[in-house]
Image (cartoon, rainbow, N blue to C red; front, side):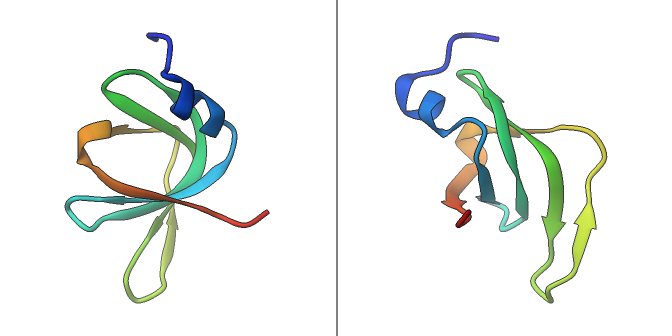
Length: 74
């Protein structure tokens, strides 16, 4: 992968809730980035009704499609 920029590099190995432009929401640990993608591991899909569904493997999200990331308190 390409070398991540400094802001994103400081965010790796933390747990986030990622909301996409499509309003889909995922919770996971940010493990890697490149100029086009964010890679989450230990991912759970979050539904608006509160349901949580585990996602197998790693989830690659397009950086331009991520509306925002929320840090979860440790």
